[in-house]
Length: 442
Image 1 (cartoon, helix red, strand yellow):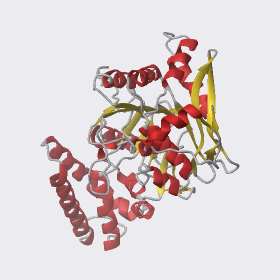
Image 2: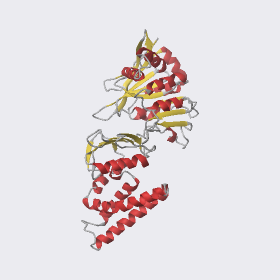
Image 3: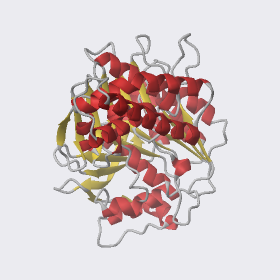
């Protein structure tokens, strides 16, 4: 798909696009004002594009347009590019459609990189004619294409949303020298723990342990750096949850998409999911809905489990409160450099507004969290794997950790030792530690 961007960047193709696009955008605006949507609108787009390109060829052939070249390969590429302008993200669209592209980094309209599935970083042609045009494109996406409409302007210089395709888009303007956009591809290929075992993210032993921990309703924190795969692993863990349970999720941008997952027979894995998403304030400063608001609401929705996509501010206290107030089995992710460090990170977030002392926060936190699972991504190879699993406790006012799984020289976690009380808790849920692996400690 990346080759399409190169084709669409050819001067002859751009000439056709720039000639036809103003008329097509006016038609699109009129159609949207008349509430035309869905398949009807898509059909109109295709018909309008065909008409405009046909008219361009007629005028070029008659000598009425000073054109470089109007052969069929050029016109075919122009038709595709125009459809992407009307219905997609313009010249970004081929990069979104390319399944080998994991991440897209945009630093202004003419500095574009992609990170591929095999770990390579490639430079791409410009995706707009100017930074201003790029900003207008993303503004349009934010108000039309995102699952939740968002503002992106001088008053709201940051943007975070999930596209209809599932991609996560983060954008910054005004506070950076040039508009900066990062787009991450969701990993929909990993939905079950046995798939994580197959790709080496977890060992078979760790997969059985984590599955039992979820079924036993342990509260779990998934920690790791940016892009380590925390959300993807959390979705895999949540698919161990019984379909009769009600799950309430809270995210800045919906990435888990539990309500869309189906089994081999086409049955929904989680038919009772309430997916809450934050909102920024509107131009009048009203309508903001934060993660803390989501969690406050979640407690009134009678959840069996509460899940937070990423804890990064004062909502940490609400998350811990939800863990303590439920029957267990809640989860969240947090940025941290290790399993032990995750608890310190959450404690700091809980005390941001000074309503809790560090000691009170620590006591609540260690009472709520059962396990921390630390996942890592190798920067050179892009491999993602669980490196450490620790049980959390409190002794003499200090956080204590029992490292259940520890890394081998290749970085992947293997069983080290399992507390006896945890072994007994997990046994009814399908996990019995082989006598030859690790040790049970009392």
